[in-house]
Image (cartoon, rainbow, N blue to C red; front, side, top):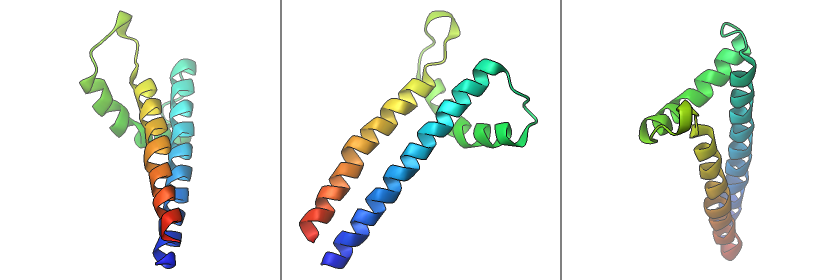
Length: 99
């Protein structure tokens, strides 16, 4: 059973890293929106293509507040923090109990 526990712990670690990297990508997206970067730059296009599916779904669900300010990145950060504190920690505790 310890093999499955180690596998679960490794999955939790990879998930934590993926969520951390995605949060940095969202931060880059916010900064790009402030500086009005070239939309034809391949890096800018890659960042937009990685973040737009998530942000557009949240934008459709959120009502528009105060002058059209986009609160969707904040909601994404809250979701990432929830997943890191709940899901990753739960997987780690399950893996620890299996070892």
